[in-house]
Length: 140
Image (cartoon, rainbow, N blue to C red; front, side, top):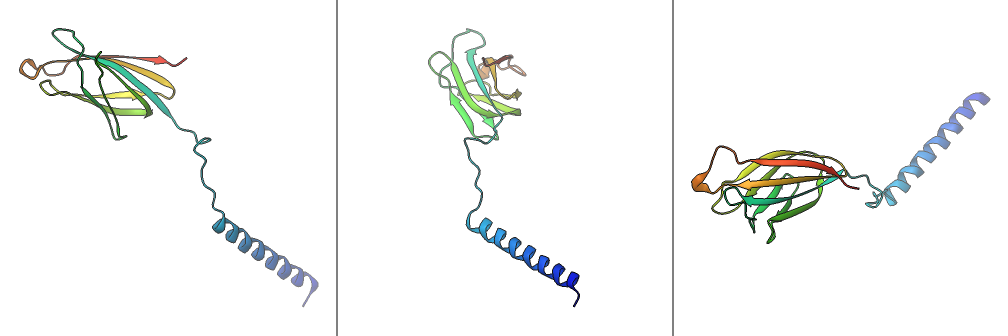
């Protein structure tokens, strides 16, 4: 055998040994993501829900963000607050017994606070789509 062939075979064996060692180390010491350093894109949603006719705050209204398992109930002032809502277009559903359900697509921006005022109408006086107003406010 020529010297160059022997060197090539030697380097090939060294490379295979290193590859085998690397695979063995990776198998015994897998890399796990660190939740503290992972980049997550989330926003916050808050708002107030009132009766369309009287303007009074509605308590115990269920507010859900479809697809991300985020939900909240309004408090005694008709307010709700949802943190860590994934960014993008989400479907927000609002429901309370005796009132027409509301379903709207909303846009969640990373690091932004999206505020809503939602006016619910009673089922007996329901219209095609209750009014919803919103605004996006940057957290500061």
